[in-house]
Image (cartoon, rainbow, N blue to C red; front, side, top):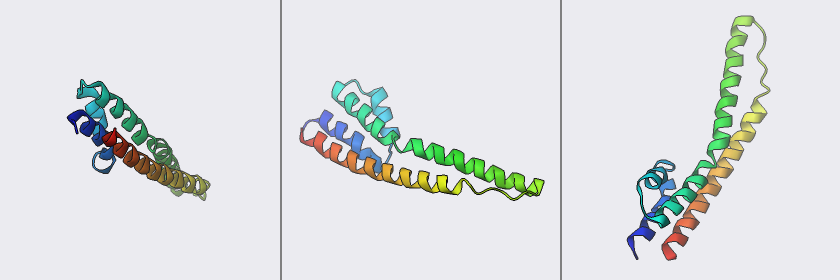
Length: 113
């Protein structure tokens, strides 16, 4: 087994120890085309769950702000964000699980080829 294939597979297995950081560092630091190609793919896969996570954080911030403002205005806060929060949490969990399985399979495939 040669070294670039091992490093290329570590891009995918990095979802276990440094999800976005390791492929980003290898993408910027590596001169090998194989490692850079796999680093781009691993980075894209590992960034997929970040989209619903960002939306979840924004929704949580908005909901917390409404609760905080309700204490000062005397109005009851609307909890209309609860359904959105649950859906975004489920979407994040599904995408994170899919990214884990996808990266594991791609890492094994990169080792074998």
